[in-house]
Image (tube, rainbow, N blue to C red):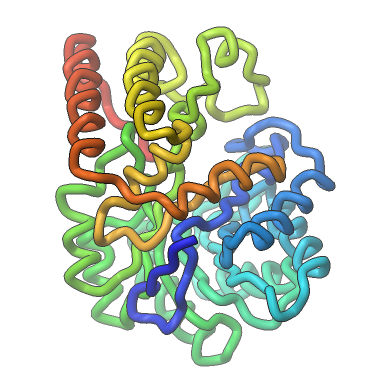
Length: 334
């Protein structure tokens, strides 16, 4: 496993982090379907055993369920192997299946205390504002995170899904340790501005959904997509729907030829492609079963050569041309 420095912090993190969005289950707006709790806890424990030294979660994942399972797993991990814990605030459960957006001071303080209790820890290693919404509250939210850091409730503070302009506003208050954006072969919005800005400002970049929510694993077919349960939010993602789905599945077939030539799996290729960027610190890899994190952790040992990068770029160009032929298709946020 490779390790890299996280932004302006003293943390050295594995280039693969375990993402716990999916293990939150399906009983909320952005769920991934039902999740077996014991299997989720085993997955978290196994991630540490295979060299992953940090776990990413959020208060809103499963409406607190993801953090609870991380907390239960931590009790099973020896103290000297305890992973770094990153979680997030700013998204709240307001009932009836709706998600609130709030970065006001009192709300964040309450969220922090609730996260500490669910995780069963005294200090959050990396606390992040989940989304910059409402935009006019981001300064108040950031001032609150700065105060929580001064109080010892959190060690480092970062942001997720923020723009360059929004990060510049926050940088004037306190340095940002990290940014967490979506980044994969099929979600490349961060390349033109965000990556260069983070590199210049020494802000760590923790990329989520590097496998395109599973599309880039080679395990999806039109039949599997059609069989996804209603609780799985991917049923509402345009990349999993016609006509984009057909284009994406054809693209994955091209990627399979590249990965086979390297002797890698498709997940390894997808993650290594994300990690090729010098500004990227790590990729957040979701897993719902122990065998999944064992397979994807291997990507933490991979490095892409120039010819492999060019092969992927050629396939990406053909994908872009195929999408363009369908007319303008707006890139989803995540």
